[in-house]
Amino acid sequence: MKQFKQNNKVSTILILLLFLIMFLFALSISSVDARKSHNKKNNALKHHKQRGQGSPAPAPFVGSDPTQLGIFNIFAFGAKGDGISDDSKALQAAFKAACKVGWATIEIPSQLKFLIQPITLEGPCKPQLVLKIDGTLLAPPKVGSWPKSSWFQWLNFKWIQNFTIQGSGAIDGQGYAWWNLSQVHYIQKKSKCIPDMKPTALRFYESYNVMVHDIRIVNSPLCHLKFDNSGSIQVNNITITSPENSPNTDGIHLQNTKDVEIQHSNIACGDDCVSIQTGCSNVHVHHINCGPGHGISLGSLGKDKTVACVKDIVVENVTMQNTLSGVRIKTWQGGVGTVRNVSFSNIQVTDVKVPIMIDQYYCDKRRCKNQTEAVAITGVKYNQIVGTFSVQPIHLACSNGVPCTNVDLIDIQLTPSRSSLGFQQALCWNTYGQSKAPLVPSSIDYCLRRGGGFHGRLAKSMEYSC
Image 1 (cartoon, rainbow, N blue to C red):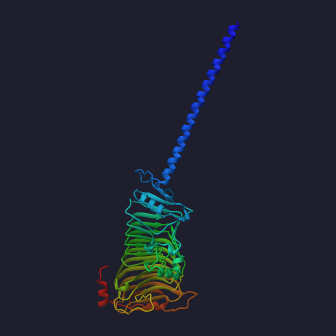
Image 2 (cartoon, helix red, strand yellow):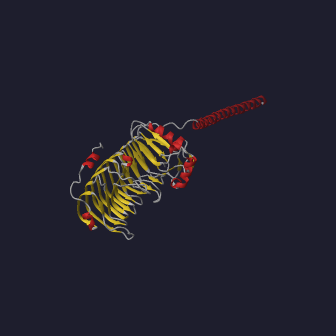
Image 3 (cartoon, helix red, strand yellow):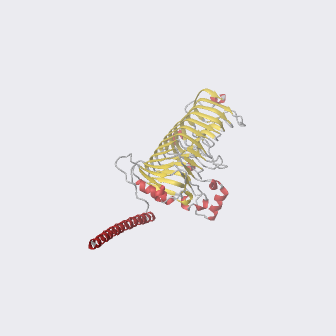
């Protein structure tokens, strides 16, 4: 009996030892697994940091379905978005990556500001590239901080096709310092290599099938939006704003550009709301609210005896308030070429100094040399120009040597505004065409000469290929 009790004690001790060994074994396995998991997390974090410090995040995968848009957020390429840090390289990198992917979108996030130095973004790119601006792009605020080679444009797009800029954000040229002529002249004296030029905020060069819509462009040092040597352009529902006294701040500037539609936009600036220069054709401007500014202009054309060619221009359904001119054509003496097939219709003017103008003696100096050659102007229709003027209702000053021909004045009703201190009569010189009632003031009815007005110098000017 005593031996049996001793054996039972031994069995109990062995069982307890067995349970203890199993517990310690399980605890060691759990510890090993925890260490492995911890090491994996550390390695992953380390790899993530190293990848972030090296190159920008890789481009997202884009499938064959065009609705699966590749999104290239500027933050993924190192942007700070604080309005102080230079985010130019991030924008450049995002554009370069998106350019290689069809149907890609570059995102500028909302409620943030991105300081961008003068930059050129070049194509060609894959089709349907979009720059979506919901935040604000800021130009360098100080004139002296701009590189000497970048005084002609700030955001420059070259050789781009099938490209869209859209969004709820803004492009801010911060042009206040540029408008201060004394500061610019001081810098030019300090550095003789700097050209006598101010930068355009947003420029397209040799670009086609471009759309710009919904964004705001504000306070450009010079032109706000410019198209050079481009075609198939759509501008829709944009807002352009700069102070009335900001010099040469054209809203939209076209040069050697064809097949353009500008519509449903608000433009207030210190120069022409829309400026149409030589080499432009098939341009349709409609449903624009313009003012303050200098109105909508063709020209100036033919400066320094150059050839100027503009044709097939339609401007309609436009309202203008407190502008220098309404709809005008301005050319320099001595130029050659032709302006033809131009229509201005349904223009509502309020307190505009001179609502209708053709000026073939345009001069931006105190004196310009009298010359017999001039850009020929033919086939211009003014129809339903209605509202108030503050200086003169109509000013048609055509060249002595090359008269304006086929100019039609139809349903012109212009009365003096409350602030009017100018001439009540129309001024017309060497202009041939027809007029049709109603015509207010009545002097408009006697404004145009009857007949063709065609002679040798007109024929010679029109001989130049346009």
